[in-house]
Amino acid sequence: MLLLSLFSNQEFIPSLGLQLASVAAWLSLVMLTAWGVNRFAKPDSEIVRKIVHIGTGNVILLAWWLKIPAIAGIIASVLASAVTLLSYRFPILPGINSVGRRSFGTFFYSMSIGVLVGWFWYLQQPYYAALGILTMAWGDGLAAIIGQRFGKHKYQLFGGQKSWEGSLTMAIVSFVVCSLILLSVQGNSWQVWIISVVVALVTTGLETISFAGIDNLTVPLGSAALAFVLTKLLVSG
Image (cartoon, rainbow, N blue to C red; front, top):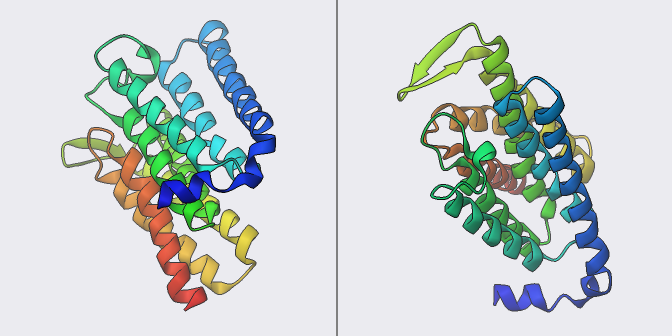
């Protein structure tokens, strides 16, 4: 039923080529930027990874604004997930998957995009998918960079080491992403600010207790679902 409804939305078909070309152009720019940084700047695999991490996450905005069909996003997610799984066995994406520890983060990241697109495109509320993916892309991406470069106050949880600076960055960026998206679609209200605070705190907690890259799944799904439920309770109520 879900797949039939995704295919039956014919208004997208005439401009599908242009939509996909826009996405391809953006991804090419992201990859070119990552290559340029790796080639001409001081080599830093973490910076290159986060450029790709944040840049690919922004594709969800193009999908939302250009009204790209959900089925296209789901297929892309499945293909990306398959490639990342193969890359754990074969050196397909060595620079992206190399994090110095056992992690399936890239696979979870690809999978979460497909789940959120299928879920919220079906509900005709794609901004929740954007909220979830961008919270992960920008929040986790900047938290990792700030934590590694400026994190002086460390703490350990479930065997993983974090920094208060990184966690604070995650909370602030999550709040900004959530509030900007909700303000753009719901307008200014006290409910938007409350929802944004709660989402920021919960997603920071999910990122903190993560292991093996599972936050790439729990953060986007958790933030999107929480914002959706809280909006239903506090706004639509």
